[in-house]
Image (cartoon, rainbow, N blue to C red; front, side, top):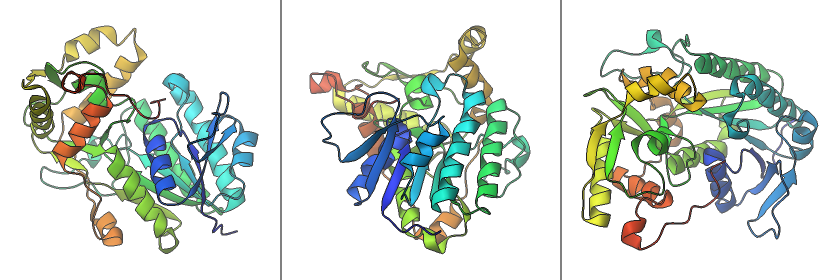
Length: 340
């Protein structure tokens, strides 16, 4: 059945994109539910209906989704442990709930689905329907995620996928900005850049991604049951736009511009056999060696224009949220919702 209630279940509400979706859904007047594995927050002052449960439990997800028009699937296994083994069962539970409720599933997508055969020529853009032949384990799982969602769209669920570049933002959680370029909570004396010199890279400011999803939800009745969109985000054409913005913001706040240095890939290579996070970073290195820019023409045709925060403004908010500008403020900035 078609569900018209203005209620959304957010799985992964304490994470980066999940938390941002919670904030923007509430601001837009939605009723928001969220699952938590621990005790539900008390007192309830955040206007969220917190429910105790686990995204790995189908019964918990089915119960939480009752009466919901939307399910935001932004959840990951705790600490990203056993990601490859657990992420598909989590999605299957969301699909079962969406079919039962006739709900729309919202999935934050990535470019990990695409292998080099899909990469367009320089100055061309990557379309939503480009072939998906990934070379990595994570990319193959992403392909399967989308394939299962497409099947679900023929069984009573609706699906909305928004693919974006690397996330950054004040509460973005684990991402290249906070794990590679700068260190959270520290004064920025240097910026490490992972990309090859002169190679473009695509970034997406988390509040813009959530705003895009929310605007698409407003017109979801006009979209096909399985809808995919690409965001243009912030295109760093040669690797200097993002580092330049960080340097400008830090210099304005502290009076001293940070040095720009090459990311130590050699160290990642040495340590990756022992550290899972570094193994995943190394696996995604190809995205820093090839320019890959996404075509947002389909998104613009639906929304008119893509939500877009100016780069320096977005970088300032990100660094403030991560506590990197506390030297100028006199104390460390307090983050909002926990990353995960």
